[in-house]
Amino acid sequence: MAERTASTTPTKKMLLDSRGGVGPRVTSLLHDGGIGTISKGRLLSSEERLLSRLLSEVFWIADKIGLPRQAAEGAGELARKAVSSKVVKRSRRPAAAALVYLSANNNGLCKSIEEIASAADVPLNQLNREISKLVFGLNLRLKPFNVAALIDKLTRTLELPPTTANTACRIYQSAASLGKISGRKPAAISAAAVYLACRREGVKKPLSTVSEAAGISVLTLRKAIALLESAAGFK
Image (cartoon, rainbow, N blue to C red; front, side, top):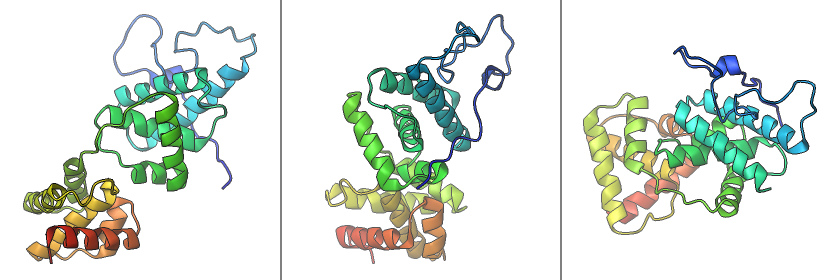
């Protein structure tokens, strides 16, 4: 798939918050840290050019998914480490998307791999490979995904009542307690739990509607539903 450059390159003006202040804003989303110490007449090194391009991609993806500033800055810090340690050797959209995902995970944000892959327009399997490479290369630890938070987010997106979210959480917890859904995609499992909760409560939500809201295919959702049904006995 052809790479597309980020449509927005961050500038100091864009990264200033609404508060006033004396002096430039320090930010990890600019290759010079926002302090403007690099002379305009000096050519950037290859590493600085790589970092600048990578941060542009990170900024674009973070802005597109509405990532909070703290998490966006965290992605910028990870980008610096990845470039300086040679884990990332060229600017590619999948690498930037992986950095955004890892920072969101580190900050406890409910951002699934599927959501970030869709927003960044990168193949899911490619994003998974980049995440694995960064986790290994930077010696990182992924936090366990909060499926309950995903369920809550999905039910709000689908405008379902809180009772449906509670039912979905019970379905998920029942299956999880049996140890039969370990390692499964959180987005698929949460969507399946929500769909089964809707069915149990008589709420009509088509498979296509739930799968689209969760950022997964209908086939993936069907498989997750079958897994939950067999694991927890929900029919």
